[in-house]
Image (cartoon, rainbow over all chains, first blue to last red; front, side, top):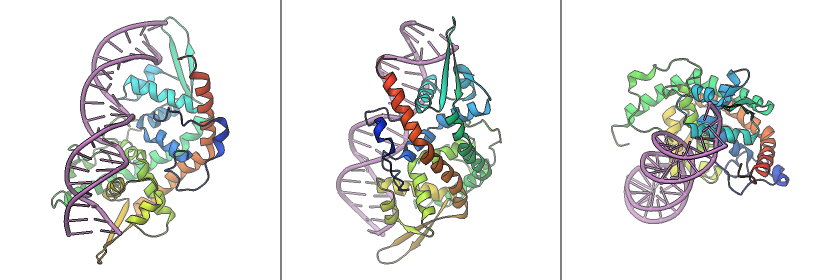
Length: 144
Length: 144
DNA sequence: CAGAATCCTGCGAGATACTG
DNA sequence: CAGTATCTCGCAGGATTCTG
């Protein structure tokens, strides 16, 4: 998704990240890394789709679920998630090869927090949209 | 942050968003809109900073907290959050003008879900980073 | 079918400079 | 101090094409 480069953590420096709450800015900060995931709409959607489907999904099935995703972004997203150890990948070597994806145990633990966001969104986003409309109406006129 | 363009909601089409759970793909979906917010690292950081500080913060104070943010991105972020009704803005018209930001009630409700993510990150990101390292080690070699 | 490779583009976001 | 206004560059991400 994002960081592929060489800044990668050698197994040794895994624990370096301190606990300062503000150090999102620090590329080493775990929270920042997480936001790079969550930040990508497709990652969230993929995890949520897999969570909704108790079991596995094939590439194309996922693509169907996640309307609007390009196969490039889907592949990219899935590889990132696999790399993170959040999703598992199983290849079935048949004539038309089939690849199945599923959440790992780790991935499953992420579902709850994500759902938390989704719930919040469903409850409050209408209000937010209303706020936006009001704000824009009062704003757009006088150049601010 | 993201959508300023012309797709903007006329006051009328505010309530259109249905309740389908998977419709992240649908641009009209509230959850999608939320992810555009959460997706931006600065938004999350701003909300969390304001949450941490019981009270108000001035522009420069926020800038100091959120290391790495440019004043441009900060201003942009804050305006977006204000537009969403998540943060409130109070101007004190003194000789050196002072502007204070604080979470609104709505904004406060978002803190918990966000904290959920942060907690997850602190607990599991080390594992994720480990996974990445392993994955890359096994992968980088054989072109895959 | 599941992906890798290539090309091309928009806008996200930094640096700099100017106002009230 | 608290912004707004430009200009510019990088790369995220779409469309298209090719393979095993």
